[in-house]
Image (tube, rainbow, N blue to C red):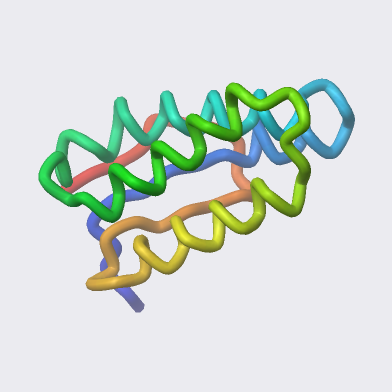
Length: 101
């Protein structure tokens, strides 16, 4: 089993998007907050992560943000996260306290 260094859960955001109570822009904004709060402190000097968060932030401020645009940035986050098992991203489980080592 892979030993992930960090974990972020956003099943609650995925569900809210699917049921129409959040837009792609609102999901992006909340994901920015979770990443800045729980993950950035461990990777503050990682420019790639900062760029991904900036992309999510741009989406969060664009009322025309589409699901495809959000998915493109999310794919970048998954690629970053997979390197050296930095971050387990779970879109199915509701938010709980994210964990770090």
